Length: 439
Image 1: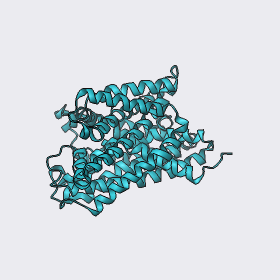
Image 2 (image 1 turned 90 degrees about the horizontal axis):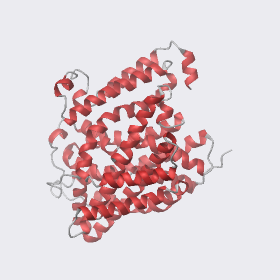
Image 3 (image 1 turned 120 degrees about the vertical axis):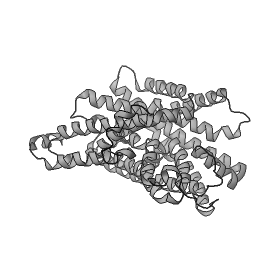
Image 4 (image 1 turned 45 degrees about the vertical axis):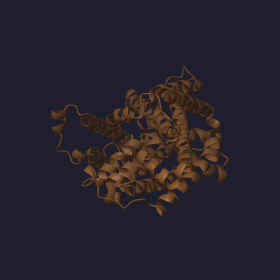
């Protein structure tokens, strides 16, 4: 029988989960979205919270409910399909985009303001040091909860609370009118902006990593693992909501201060300098560096665990080293270029990932699970390809042929299609034995 976690360890697990999610995108995207949304702040913020908090929360619970990550969710499909989806998500959230971005944002916000001149050399030196430290921490997965949950995250939370309180008590500018697409489609733009955090994808990774941490703590019972993972998810979601709301409000009340800024990091830096001066820059550097480091550790650990399972000829430690080295190399492409490249890729993979999360909850009342899951992945994958081509500016004539689909013009056609497929799957009850076999 599993030994129960103490209250301190349970809270540490939740703090660790929060720290894994609170990374680069979580800090740099909300301020700019808040400033552009302006008077439409509330619907924009709610749209963002759906994909940046709601989906990661249900994603973690889905992992707990189904007893595993993507390989478990896709076990009814041909093995290569599940492996391909999992590999794509782990590469995107790991060495290709999300993990390298943590080092770049830590450099841009935590280091550049203190340099007389930022150069490619200073960026290279910092990213090497940053990912070397992340590598060392990731090499000790059994100590992750103690290192991150009990040491790094409490310090991060204190700094974030100071910043959040300041934003609420000391707004700098009046909230201006919404601009661009935020005028008419604030909710859907906020929803799509939440893609950029990559947290729904991260949930499918971190869920299995957290279960592994629980096993190392002596929690072997599956129901106990699901309970603790759900508690951790709620703690993380609560913390993320507080951070996002304060950063959105910071952006919305920086209409003059942040004028001309092309990213949320610049708005955040301008606010901190104006309100706190030079000591504020030090505080901001601490917040960003800690947030990015903890996320980098989680991403490198989760990716290495997965790669080790898929390609077991190399050990976990070897994969940690390889992943950290790849992150360092990719990080030196540059932040703007990395974000630009990642957008169409995220529009491609997100619909499938989110459909898998929804399916994990609905599968218990679906008899033809294999058929429904196959159709779901095929349809959301096709819609994802169209959205990716659209935002990348390719194949316009082909893409425009599908304008008849609901919400297609807002890149959300996968939502009604997923709902229809699942409803049909729930109503069709022909093969009850398959339902029982898949549970």
